[in-house]
Amino acid sequence: MKFKVGDRVRVRPDSKQMPKYAGKVGTVKTVTHGVTTRYPYAIRFDCISAKVFHANELVKEE
Image (tube, rainbow, N blue to C red):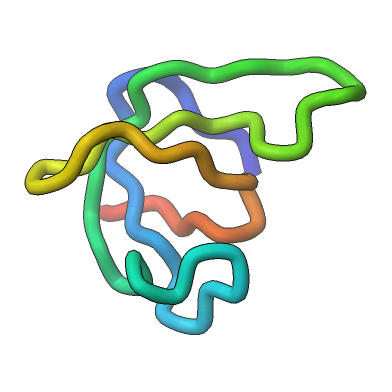
């Protein structure tokens, strides 16, 4: 699944990468691409500073 800057996303409730952010909603701040990038989406959450997540850890907020 592809996300764009400005998309509202939610960290999966069963997140293995960062379980303490599971269920949190945030906005995609930057999108990085590249073979070497393990975590291509930097998310700025409403209540916490930017964290970087892999796309598999995110679901789009409707």
